[in-house]
Amino acid sequence: MNTLTYLDLFKDSDAILSGHFILSSGLHSDTYIQCARALMNPKRAEKLCAALADKIRQSTMPSFNIVIAPAMGGVIVGYEMARQFGMDGIFCERVDGNFTFRRGFVLEPHHKALLVEDVVTTGKSSLETVDCVQSHGAEVVAACSLVNRSGTAKPLGTLPYAALIDVEVQTFEPSDIPESLKDIPAVKPGSRFLNQKKAS
Image (cartoon, rainbow, N blue to C red; front, side, top):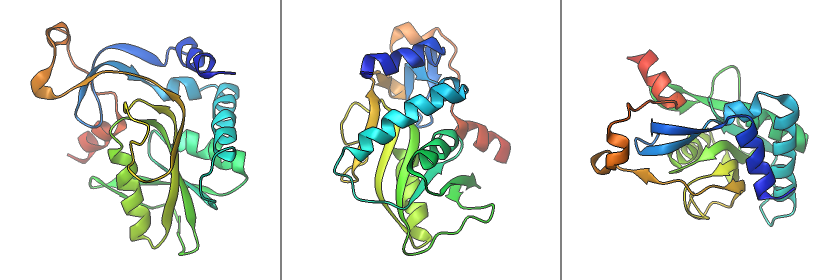
């Protein structure tokens, strides 16, 4: 299967939405990729994550011994990627706006983590996850996502990174929204906004 075929799996599951969206980063866009739609079918989730795992195996990424994902978007793909690699998978979640580990998850200095996301745009949540892991005495040695919509091959700087598909989607600063979007009510589908709303 090639990139277009994987993209078709997202389209077939109505995971690529059109409208006016405010992303978790605060940027606006006319396109939103709702990976949860693609991952709600276990067979499709397995197929997508198996392909991403194969891509990582064929790469020169450093070796890792645990999979870590940020909640909420990374939980399902993180679980399936851990299953693909036959190792433990855990997730961090926001408490008072900051990522931390709960539910009895413990990191040790020997843990070398693969950070797993569903979609990477600005990389903000990924880098916050890196900081969280480091604060618990472990290390993120590589990262991956099903979708890279950042517009760059290295959205996380020097951290080794791989994506199953790259999608070119325009984003706009709140002060630079095009006229075509201004008349469309903006919605906030990202989990970060939901968490903040609950915390307020």
